[in-house]
Length: 280
Image (cartoon, rainbow, N blue to C red; front, side):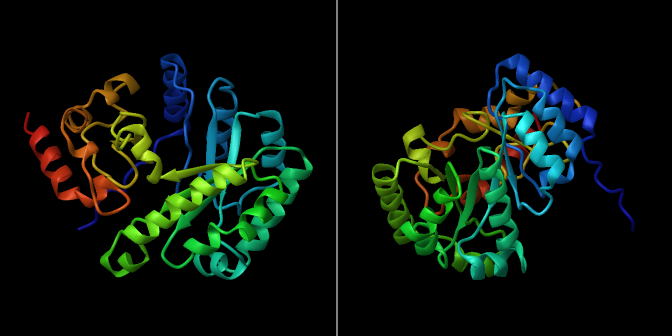
């Protein structure tokens, strides 16, 4: 039986979200995908909110002259380009030619004196390369100002061997501490590794939450459960959803856990919570 496709949020609905965020004093909205640069109107609307910083996590393939000009006019738009290490491993994961495109983008942004960062998905395979001085000096030399290390979270058991374990997370934590001490020319962010300094996971409105492409307000991208849609609620109401309140009032966000993401590791518990709040 055919099912009706899920309708994505329209430009106007995203504009309303940005307006409400501005009114609430929210100063940081991360745009990710899929590929956010496919929605040029949304990026342009974000540029009209100078009081909000918009890091744009992009694969870089749609960055063109119009985007370079927009980034020059709207300095609150900060491209964060996904790179997985050197050419071989980046092209293997992202597609042939992607590494060269990313390097070309970086060189052009640097030539125009525009700020940008890089996002690295850390796996058991690339962890030593992406935390090495050699790799990071290449990024810094091209003008990169921030590196976001995102621990790989498997979506299937088939890819679980790529997820960093205790040994790899300990290594990455030590390396980031070293980099912050010895190479302060760039900012280093570890997700979710930095959550310990924040008193636990900051998802579900403790520090951030995720809005998916069709409006569902979720605790975070790795915990795709929602009991409210932003089409039917204000941003303030979404922050007070029964699911978010239940997660904030319990211990799950503070729990110790084996994997990089507590909500992904304890997804059975999150599912039981959303099933229970759905009956209230």
